[in-house]
Length: 178
Image (cartoon, rainbow, N blue to C red; front, top):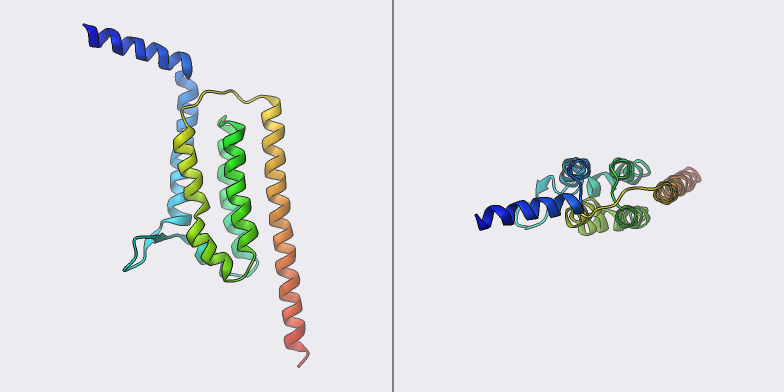
């Protein structure tokens, strides 16, 4: 009897902290972030290493398109998380991971090595796992904040694209000058 009462108490307490429908909405985000982390950061095991590699460091080798496409996949997952009501501070931390990876990823070769080490999508999945059960409801201020963060990410992605195109243009000019 004692354990039954204790279980009922914890169920009531859990509901008071985070209503079941809110918990389900946030839990729906978890499979997407797990999938993105797997595909982008953990897809294949490298023989002789404990670490896995995903598409993120591989596509970083493709000039211009690689960094932008990896950031786009990560930002899309972030937008979905925002729509599901994740706390704005969590979304901001996730956006920062994407931003750091995009900024360093713009450097040829170094960016790919950094993406292999940094693994921004796995970091975001780990953050989600730590915070998925915290209660909060998004307000208009949350949406303004998150959309501003996403806007900054888009500007950085566009800036990276423009810088990459400019560098490629300069390289082609140098090669054509011979």
